[in-house]
Amino acid sequence: MNNSTLLGITTFTYLFTMVLYFYYLFFRNKKLGFVFQSYNLLPKLTALANVELPMIYAGTGQRRKRAREALETVGIGQREFLNPGNIPDCHFCSH
Image (cartoon, rainbow, N blue to C red; front, top):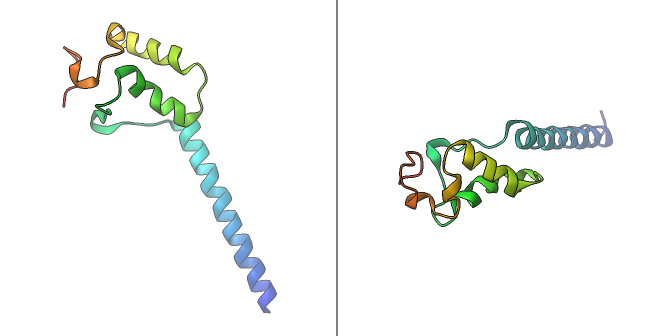
């Protein structure tokens, strides 16, 4: 094998690895979504903004509407503008 063949194999391997990595990132973001372990909500953001944040990263449309529906589903829709630490009776919002 000469140097150009080795360079070609190395370049192909690098490009193939990058394509796989970007496909992984796309798949993780679009198909799996985000999982917040231990309810890591950002205390400076409102409940609504915390729900919207992963949708912003994913490029999801109708974020505000979908975030409000999610808050309604868990029973805290009327408290969407409160910070997580200020939502009473919210067991996953306390610090």
